[in-house]
Length: 190
Image (cartoon, rainbow, N blue to C red; front, side, top):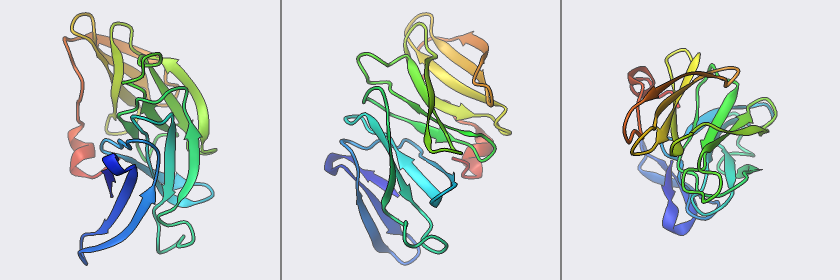
C-alpha cells in the first residue's frame, strides 16, 4: 500500500505477483507515514491514512481473504478538527489509533485518539507545548507512546501512558521529529 498523494489515492500493489490490486480514492494529499492497521470490529483488518489537505482519516478494508466485500474500499471516514496530518500510528496492544495535525494552522499542538472499539474519535488534546506535535511511536509493549514536540528550543519528546494517554514524562531536546522503535520496525508493528 502506498500513497499516490498528488492524485489523492492509495494504491494497492501485490508485490509477490507484481500486479495492481486496487486504487482507492481518499482525501486531499493522503499521508499515511508508516501507516496504521488494526482489527476493526465491523470490517475486520483495516488500514488508514490521514491527509495533509483534508480534515479526516480514511479507513479502508485490507482483508481480501476473510472480508472481500470490504477489501480495498473506504469503510470509514473519521472527521478531525483540522487538516494537516502527517502521521497515524497504532500498536496491536493499544486500544488507540493516534493521528497528528502537524501542518494545521490551528491544531498543530494536538493529536487525536481514535478508539479501535468504536472507530470514532475519543478525544483530541494538546501534547506539544513549545512546537508542533508530530510522529507518534509506541514502545515494545504499547505501555508508552512517544510524541515529538517539534521546536527549535524547548521542544523534545513527550511520553504518554499507552492506555490512559496521560503525560508520564517530558524530555527536552532540540528540534526532534521522527523516532523509531527498533522492535516495531523489525517486526512490522504499525
